[in-house]
Structures are given as structure tokens and as C-alpha cells.
Image 1: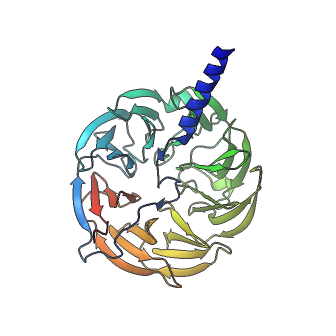
Image 2: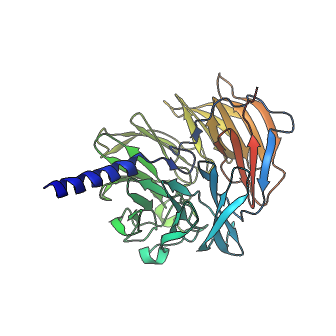
Image 3: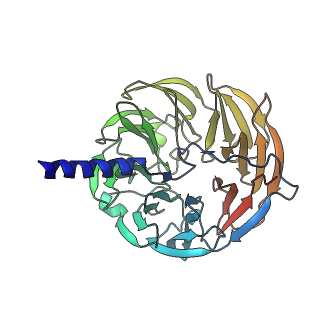
Length: 413
């Protein structure tokens, strides 16, 4: 009896430790684009904040870095091969590990942000494969290939940053019979399979909603947003993207849904410019159903993310080439700022906006009108300015192709 009690206590302790571990991942701790740093500069010199260091050898890619202590991790592609890099606080390489072929077709390079949990790092490649590495030395622990899961390619390559839930890591291979899968995060074995809607992936990094009675995974496949019970993979509900008639649907048409959804106080918000655009849904208390509250079909943000601050939502418009402020209660546009299409994050009461012209802008979102406080231009790096900025320990990180740039934005006075 004592033996079984001891085993139960050990198992319970390990489970609690897994749940309690810090997750370092895509767009910050909650995947909502908000970073907890304080004491940051409220304006920058004309030439921009001080460049602490640059590393021009992280390979082609559009994914942001993630962090653990004083080490950062980032994916990149060189000569068609994908690598996971570990850099120290000065940008010097500690180690790099290969994870096989990377995406080299349309917009070649890595797409995702590594997810760091405990002693493990999870990397999803543009080829749809999932890898797990040891954080300390980059040793490969396990991998699962797209073909093993009957997965299918997207038009521009797989672009999912792995979601870890307790002892599981979630992947959307997009197979007709293996649409969404949960894998044991310690060994890669399958824990459950969800058929979803049987569609190929939608370039989306999933969101976790934690309700009192259940945990829900929210993600997009080609033409639906899915709500999946995290305990067993059951599809609870879906929300169809009706921007294209069914007869016009094909690879590369109306299927790009790169922005992670947001859950706040009983409501789900999403902005998918290649889908239903800006939408607010009411989630039932038990998570079993949704009801549409509003939809604004003119907010065409494809991949820059969005920020919700109280009753306002800040997001880019690709067609209008500006930053918009929406009323979260009605979905109506409250303000517009002509700063180009781009990606937005938030820290210490201010917005950080990195547009596709390579300009980084510090924006005050308070008051009736948004205000640009400071601006500078990224002159280093390669290819498109698509990566989402990251803030960690008072440093602003900008990824531009092969280059990772670290700017000091801490107020040292």
C-alpha cells in the first residue's frame, strides 16, 4: 500500500511540475503579443535605440527568437537545411543543431518560433516536421515527420509554432484523417488524433484557452477555425471562413490564417485578413459552443498579429497600409495611423510596430488618436521584413532574414 501511495505521489508531483513550468513561445508568454518588461524608454534618439549586437549568421527565416534565462533560440535555413541556434546574451553562438530540410520554395526560410519548456525545445519546420531538442546542448531527443502523420503541405510552407499543454505538444499536420494531433512531449508518441474538418493547415499557431472545467485548443485550418477539447481531441465547434465560395477554394486562395486568436473574459477575438477578417465570438461558459457577436470584413491583416488593450484592438491593415484601432465592443474603426502594413507588439504601455518597409515605430496608443513617438529604420539583414518583434530583459529583438538585431530599449536613468 505504501509503495503504491509513493508512486502516486511521485506521479502527481511530476505532473504539477510539468504544468507549472514556464513556457517561452511565439508572441510572448500568452501568445497575445504582450511582454512584461517595464522601465523602458518612452522615446528614442533620431537614429534609434543603441544596437547592442547583431548576429548575421542565423540563416534565412521569418520566425522570432524565444528565450530561457540568458540564452535565446532561433530557427534558420542555410543551403536548404534547417538549424536551431542557441545564442548567448551577447549574440554569440553557443551551439547549433540541424533539423533536416527547410522550406526553400516561395519565401524560402524558417517560419516558426521555437517553444521552450523545461529542458526541452520544440521546433516545427516549414516542411511540417516536429523536432524536440535538449535545451542545454542541442541534442536531438525525438522527431516526428509529416509523412508519418499523413500531413499535407500548405502553399507557402508549414508555419506553426508548437503549442505545449501539460505533457503534450500540439501539431496540425493537416491530414484528412490526422488533422490535429497531440504528441507526448517527452517521446513524440501519439496521445490523441482529431479529424477536425479534414482540411490542410492554415499557417496558424494555436491558442490555449483554460476554462474551469476544460482546456480548449483554438487553431485554424484552411477554411475553419477549430475549437478542440485538449483532453481528448474532440471537436467542440468550428467557425467557417466564408470569404471564398466553396467552388473557388484551392491552395493559396483564402487559406492563410497566420494570426493567433485571443481569448479574453468569455470572448474569442480573431483577425484573419484572408478569412473572415475581424471577428468577435462569445464562448459558452463550458466551452462547448460559440456565437458570433460582430464581424468587420474590412480588416485585412494577414500575419502581423493584433493587440487588445481594454476595449480597444490594434491591428494592421494590409490594403490600407496603416495601423487601425477598433472598438472591441462593436468592431468599428476608431482611429487610423498611416504607418504601413506590419507587425505589432506591446510593452510598458506602448506599442512597437515593425512595418514591411523595415521601419520600427514606437506608438502611444492612449487617448483618442494614436501618436508616433519615435521611429528608425532597419538597414541590416536580408529579404522581407515579416518577422514579429520580441522584447526580453529590456532588449528589442528584430529578425530580418539572416540577421538578428538586439537594441537596448531600457531606460537607464
